[in-house]
Image 1: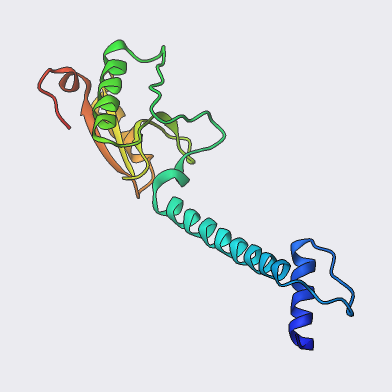
Image 2 (image 1 turned 90 degrees about the vertical axis):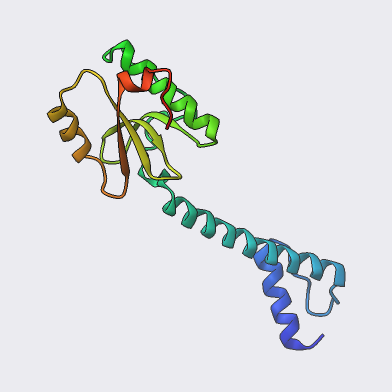
Length: 165
């Protein structure tokens, strides 16, 4: 082993948390392999983290405010809404989950808007109108981020037996 290889190996030892041997001691090949393998694995993990971050930026998870309790597939109910609205929301969630989408209800987005049913992979919100006027409903929809597709639904139509998404 020449001087340059030895210095690189000492650096690897220190980086991986091993105590480097003195200059007169010959390093074992197995230990050197282990060190190089660990270095390679740590680089791979870093690349995976970067790819996951890019994936989450492409999907709509970055728009969810993480300070609130958000759970996939849970249909949150509110006393402020009427029964028709809540049943329509539950039906829409169930239909989307049957197709295979990850659904979230009553999600608070980073701009503090609350979505009835949110699909982060598709950047899509299903907004259900039951008791609001059309003017109030349109005002509510305008506050959502521009990159999200908003699909308005009437609660009465959703609750009909022949309703499909």
